[in-house]
Amino acid sequence: MVVQQHGRPARRAAAAVAVAGIVAGATGCGGGAEAGDRSADPARTVRLAADRLVREGSSQARTSMEMASGGTRVTIRGVGLYDYRRGLGELKVQLPQDAAGAEEHRPITELLAPGALYMKNRGAGVPADKWVRVDTASLTDGNLVTGGATDPLAAAELLRGAREVTYVGESDVAGVPTRHYKGDIDLGAAAKAASEGNRGALAAAAKGFARSGVPFDVYLDDEGLIRKVRHRFSFTAGQRKNGTTAVSSTTLLYGFGKPANVELPDKKDIFAGKVAEK
Image (cartoon, rainbow, N blue to C red; front, top):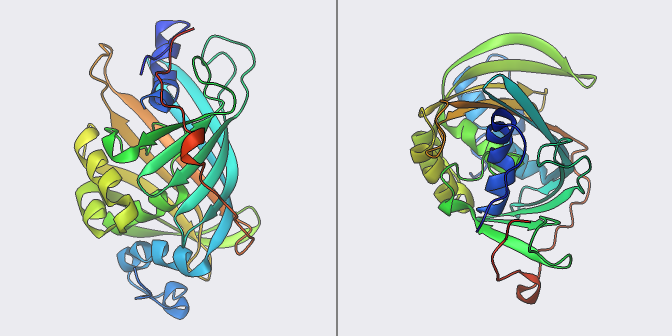
């Protein structure tokens, strides 16, 4: 696929992760009481967070991805819902003003599925009624950054590789009392412990980032549910000459249990051509 890039080099480099990437392309081992036990081992508590989400079933989500490169910061925001049992989600992702050289951008609709990312309103070369499909295991970051939003279930499954976890203290997230934990994620360990749907993508990420460790902060409520999780990724794009790009990805979860009716597009609605430059 051909990627369009506009604007100053620094802005283009920072925005390319989402703009170019968008083109390019468990069981119940921890019960609710244990998940909410303040005396439990911090690392074990954090590693069980993904299982707790699956048991809960669904939620609404807000995402924020901030990229810093060459002194320029770009933030991409998303909002949607997720079905953790099916591994399906839908987000409306809004590119920042001027991220692709224009003042206004229609939100990109993203459907998140095991092993795949579907996008609509991508732009140049794609008919308005068609979807672009990307195999997440083929992306060097496993789509943790590429789409401009980290898949909420993948964000939780990253925590399966949590190490050196410490309990920071109590904190309030959108009016909900939570416990704040921080630590580092071993991407290789997270990939091995992930569900089948995320294993390939996380294995790709373990090979694609500049460092295998990913610092994180996570906020769990009294039921062990993730209310907020932030990951800080670092990578070097091969085509760039000005060093490493730092990405901070934040996911907020709320509205647990609300229906999340996500349907994937029919095969006939998937664009089979090449995404061209304008």
